Length: 342
Image 1: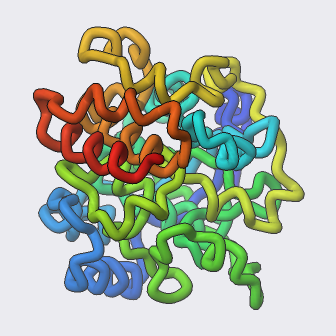
Image 2 (image 1 turned 180 degrees about the horizontal axis):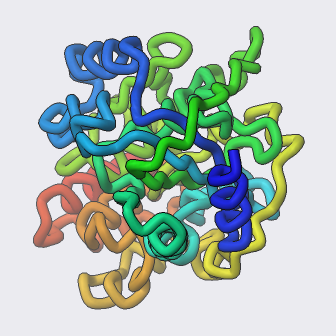
Image 3 (image 1 turned 180 degrees about the vertical axis):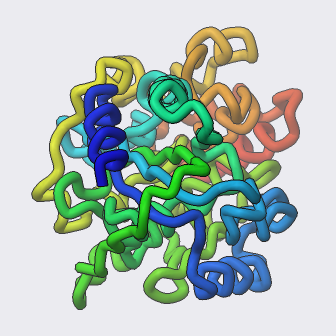
């Protein structure tokens, strides 16, 4: 189809690494999986998932005029082992995607550019662009469009790019034809399930966010369950374990986007330095970063848990210094950390 070829060429010219097309429709089993996830309470405190479940399960509930979806992927593959800092107990491990600029800004800019180009080519077409701040079932749509498949860890895996893809979509009233879904290629592999530090997968392709370190360090407000804290290690923002161990990463490529180049001070920052951040220093350090969204208190709570897991007696005074922090969640985590250290 000529339109598809033209859109694909323009998307690649704008820097997207993967492009696919599908109908603005999802199979009934996608909705069934989502409703089961919600019914089991596995979304934790993410009430917005329940509030907008129908929009997530049905693209045309989100936008009734939508006919087709252009699914797009942007590679953020790391150029080194993302798990190498897990054994550096006086340092923090931050998820690869958050070590520099906020990917939402980078991705949305390119999506809007593609949308404007499409509008110039087909002036009567309706077009809307989405990143993951909207209730879009990105991974099922990406699979239907042939970008990859949802692995046993529920994340998208690409045969050519491995686990490291940011996803975005252009919804349009253009009829761009049917998708070519990517079949599952996981086979009997369980690497992603077995590596999970908190056992967050009740079964293959099922996630309990309440046990997921990414959820706990980013979305969860208030104290973290004390039974889970020792399992978090020094992961203070997100977790890459299940992504990093996927065998398909042997085909992955390091990203070429300057905005995703890791800042040196976020690759293996000292826990003691991060613990000293007040609100102003936190905001300054993480300006333009996705980390800024969680705020100083939640961030320092995570740092305190990492300090408590460090086994490093030299960090005990750092924890004690925050035992009476103005934020009760930080103070609770600091007292827990100090009590665990020799």
